[in-house]
Image (cartoon, rainbow, N blue to C red; front, side):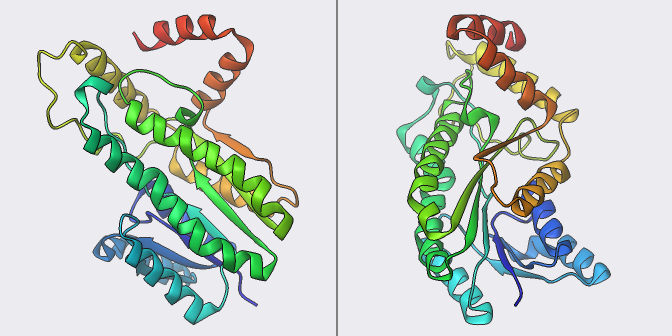
Length: 275
């Protein structure tokens, strides 16, 4: 029986590489994306390598799109063994520069969409008595820093949800894994949104500009998204996967520093790194 994987946000970056990696491992992979016209590259690779990949539409911000995608997978394959919640975006801007609607939109995509997907997939995995949910978080899901509180808060929430799910779903044979990339070499940071109402004379303009410049510079030397995909595949092969998998030297460095320092020491360390 084919093992089946559903991956969100596959038009580029981590989702793109993860769909390919899973297909190369023999998973019948449903590579979902909001605009399937952006699936040309992955389709060409799948055709060239004869990979079991199907491109399907899935806009995670639309509940009916989530339901439709899962119905398609179940109609065709009758099971889902792996769900990779990867789709998401970020918005720069300190809290006072953001509107509540911008905060809500960030959580809608990065948190509530994931919760909806899991609510639809978890019953399927429980019935199978097996399955793995992979939530792509970020090292920013465990470390706060200035300039993007909306994105960071959404990832902190995702980490909390994932921890709860490990308790709730493990009795039914379902694993929950958190992937924590550092800065990844993708177009993610180039496509991050800016607050619509942010003014050049904002008291936070200097902080935001420094963080944006620093993160974009780090992204140029960032970890390739392929390493995230390889980490996901490795975790899926483990009999008892760990709760968390950091990816990238920068992620490891920040997490190790946070573990070894007091909160105040770590704040001072991060201020030096960022400013």
